[in-house]
Length: 500
Image (cartoon, rainbow, N blue to C red):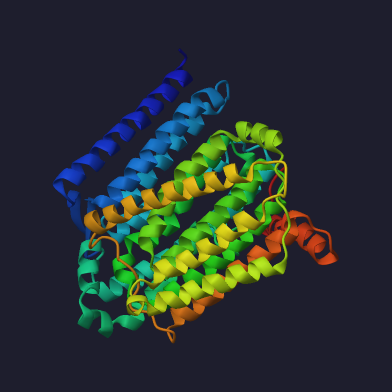
């Protein structure tokens, strides 16, 4: 075995060992409870800084998820990148990136979180430059670099304001003060401003519209890089909101921004995905849409749903990217063409979603509104699955049975995670937002979001088989991603030209 092969194997078994240790840590925390473990502590420029790890139900489950995905991607890459000149480069930066994301979820304070946030971005940037001789790959990496720096600025501003209010970098201290109603009311406006910056930082990290345009252009990178990015790093924005949910749960403005941005992003990503004929671009826009749904759940205050979404989407998207060849073969076999449908179905679905939203306000005085709001979205999605089916050439009972089976399984899994969240994460992840009434801004924004999903439902029907002039023009614009990529490339080439 040559020197490169030895280095690759060493990194691979390091990642496998980390996955085993992460799963063991998850089991240990479940049996022994949460704790914070300090490695280093000191004073720098008058600030009390700690290098410590927060081991709790939230951090350990995500640490285990990240480590297992890292090991799986590493195993896949042994054969996929075999013979590549820069295979060692990939493995070094894979280990660096997985370690940075692991530190992110295990961070116990704002400083560690911010440093790990930046390090994970640097690691991804280097992975995106696996083929530095490809101008398109370099341009995509640079776009991601610039958007990431914008997100860093938002996050740094939010953390700076947070420190000015709480006089501490430690999550435990911050959450304890945020739970004090007197303190929270006295500093509500500053906490809200901090929350807005944190929400904007999460949007930049998780490719929310209109900061999404770099993601579909990263297809020049090897498939394992796409799997790592779409299954792991892209979820950091949602994790930021979930981790800081005890701080943000009583602050309304950030949640309004997240709810509306998530709805727009989810619908936009899904519509563009319909028009794509490249499997990796289709998966990229699928990720954008799914990140929109995750941010939408965070905006509603349904943090447990967002956490479930992170875990489910990560494993699904990693599998999808690592098996793109099989997906292409299966799609050619099935050749299933979805049927267009009229405006009546989308109108019925939207009204049903709004009715569920209204019932969420009435039920137990709106204390569980976020779950009803998300249920309204699921009703629209379910009806779209039903009415978009072609009229023949497949077994409808078998299809409906499959949908029912998957829904039952999904509800069972979610129920298990919800029980786990309620019993193991009490105090770590906020339950839901405060009581919602018909006059609450979150109700108005949620109603607008449901209507956005309803409009998306209607437009999807037109895009399945565009026949009129409007749907044809819309199809072309969406196929080109509303020309965000072309316009951003023009600006980038003027200020930071790529050498071809």
